[in-house]
Length: 167
Image (cartoon, rainbow, N blue to C red):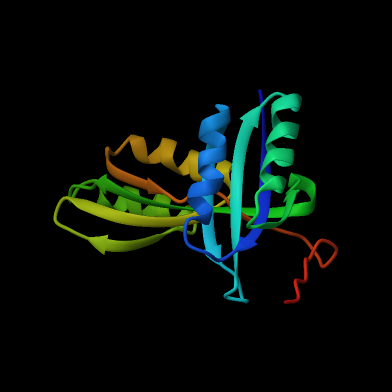
């Protein structure tokens, strides 16, 4: 099994995300993560999907998604030609005695503490998946109380793969 990151440019219409995720569900394809948000042009939404499977399945995913009415463009965001980022919010147990140790780890990862409570901290970290996963592993030592991850958002490097849609 391998993973591919697909970037879709779709019409910003109600139900578009449901139709795309429904295709995955009907075909039994696995979605590792999915993120969506409006683009600079509010008529369109950019969706980033991380899917896993063998070469044949990943090729079928691309072909099937491309056939959907709302999809204007789909292409793979190859790691060497793209920038990926993920956001994670982590609430960790941080007693008075542990707090300075947690803050030292947060600082070394260039993360931010966005909420202080008597026995916990909420930390925000943005980075590639490896950085996020390494940070999570270190925070497990203190006790993760809650965790929320966005999934990957990505863009191709440079101007080579920019899609311009006129309508």
